[in-house]
Image 1 (cartoon, helix red, strand yellow):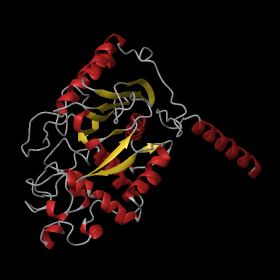
Image 2 (cartoon, helix red, strand yellow; image 1 turned 60 degrees about the vertical axis):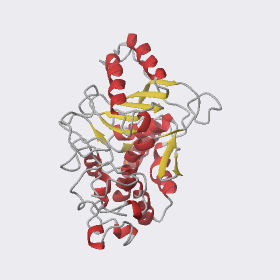
Image 3 (cartoon, rainbow, N blue to C red; image 1 turned 60 degrees about the horizontal axis):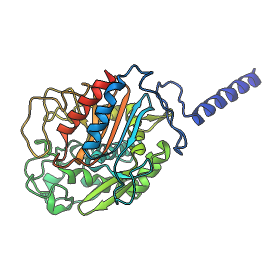
Image 4 (cartoon, rainbow, N blue to C red; image 1 turned 180 degrees about the vertical axis):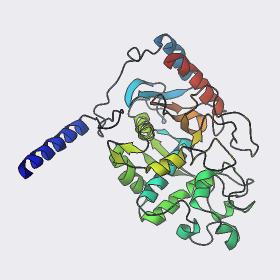
Length: 361
């Protein structure tokens, strides 16, 4: 009997290994590509019943708005993958291997790294930030500084002054306005300094932590690059699609849990009681109200009237987009330039979905 059980276990093990090498995972409807990017299965829009007559209109819209890359995944497989224009250095065409900046879409990646650190027991989101950065990481009085938690940073509720350089993350740029949790304001510096929290908690360089805990598992190959007061993630569009696929699979990759279910749920649902449309550094659609970057007033409308209600997204300046639609099991990545769109590019996001809807519906 023991010999029979051993043979069965070996057979099952070999079956799982074979499927993993082929980019398939048991217990999940998603396909996962190989880590070396040598193969990524595709599926035709016609086989999905999509309206391909509207594709030229989408492509014209994207090209006219200085788009560099578009990738659309359905259940992990590539439906559309197109590139336009030149690479960032203007030395050649933008291709599958070209890298582009995520801008504020990288905030959602940062939130995921915090979730990974929490899953490994290195920190919890309820911890005081000063536990990792020490006293004086802000210009606040010590008793006010101790009110600020990692969760406040993830939810844009630190209570810091809104009349400073909002990209800056030095103590001089973190000034008191109200107690933590009492306001929602889109303050990039408060999320950027999470890099220092993760480095302190893990003992690893931020790029090394990202590589070891996320990229090595998913096959991503981007890099955090410090630029003035910002720390920006650069990658290929396929890297961004891998990240979107990870989120579409609720934080798992080929059966490996990268983000715990609890953290993923908190990250992709309303995280505080001021801005319904914000999770952990992630934008949420389908809510009754929203607070946009640069203001504190609540607007009665969702993030997008065109995107499916359950869409959540990593969004950045100039229309950088990694959007996930759980109900459709779709991921959309868009990289490029779109001047005068501001930090969120909400109008562009809506226009993009107007075009996409005509195809998938």
